[in-house]
Length: 126
Image 1 (spheres, rainbow, N blue to C red):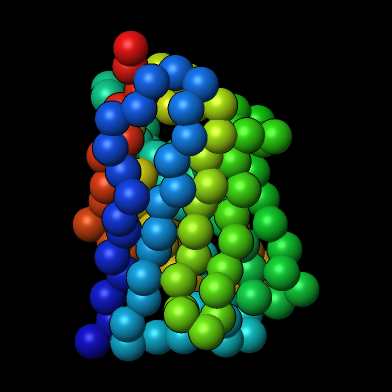
Image 2 (cartoon, rainbow, N blue to C red; image 1 turned 60 degrees about the vertical axis):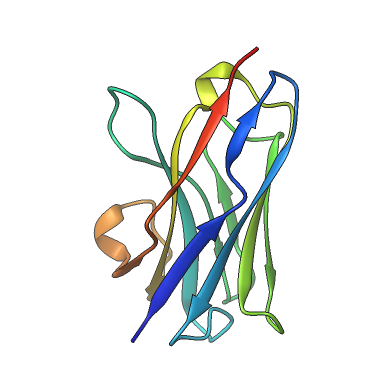
């Protein structure tokens, strides 16, 4: 049974940092053609893909809203994907989900991903 478990969310002041983790069991995130993505659902807004990291050529993607502040990385030995979030802003508040999917062309579309975590809450507030 495949499971993705996010952790590392919490309450942080604007300008602060958090590191989210997505631990996988039942699948190997570093296998070729697997992509692990981070989605965010802010209050009252649709879920959006903010980052992904693929095992094939280690491609990465960042949405304009997080580019330069967030960094995805993967620890194949631990089978964990991280999202380092720096210089957090109130608009980064939301539930963060990790998702895994397999295919040659990584995507920001939710339909590409067939495994999802339960989400972790991030709140940026003073």
